[in-house]
Image (cartoon, rainbow, N blue to C red; front, side, top):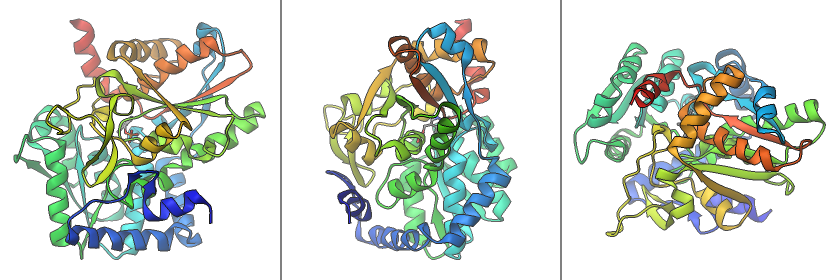
Length: 389
Ligand SMILES: *Cc1c(COP(=O)(O)O)cnc(C)c1O
């Protein structure tokens, strides 16, 4: 057995990951880890997963050559992996489908989730509608007010949205409520986590379902260019689109893996090892040792922690992590719209901003793959407000 396989099995990535939980919750997650292990290599499960990725999500999505952006940057060729073209407009649905299929195998009829900006809640509510699952989404009260339209979307899709008033009424409080619900109702309830974070088995499970991104992009770039990319670039919030975009290249030492964080929530760049939300990762702490509030213009990147595998890929030196400012991402948002006719999510615009800088300093026959994690329709009103000011 390789060293990595052993670590994944126990949910550790170097010193990061694992689970630090009260006993009753640990029991529930150990059960979940066993169920995941049972099905992750089951051909029938895999076939069903692939079926829904094709028929419902719309995969494979293209690897589009961004010719105009490449010409403007004047260096390496830029390709875009088009997660923005998935049903519901982002990569999150890949993981949601995988976890719902697991819930189905476990005989569970009720799904719960937490959501901050609402994107994961909408993806979860969508798949629950299709699979006939009862769906409850916990959301901080403050977030429900700021994201009223996403609350309405979830309700349209048949979900029950619970506004959490406890604490500060934010994402962290929604997570706490969802975990309480899970402990009370674990016999009929599945907690569907939205990023490559949290206690074991979530980071490993989310990576497994999101790794379809790099499985496709690797095949596609070999078909189009006959060689591997010089670099793969993806934005990092909790880290699910990035780990999916990286995973099939981790064992290819010549491919640079580059995660892009917002300057305003640069967890890996500025964080220290600490345990938050039941697992160990690089974390932004305030002077009292509490998770620090972050303030990125991209709501999906606003999290004081990050996936344990990214923490490990950073400290081990396999992947590089850089930062991009809100202003730079706003410029990239407009530039990709104008040059390629593709309006990216503000999260993805961080990756586009860095890739454009990188392309300028790499040779013309090099290839960069940017993971375009989502489309920007959800951000147009916000950008309108920002540009008017
Ligand atoms: C949620 C989201 C992200 C950030 O989450 P990760 O788990 O880091 O991928 C990035 N882009 C889009 C479009 C999102 O919706």
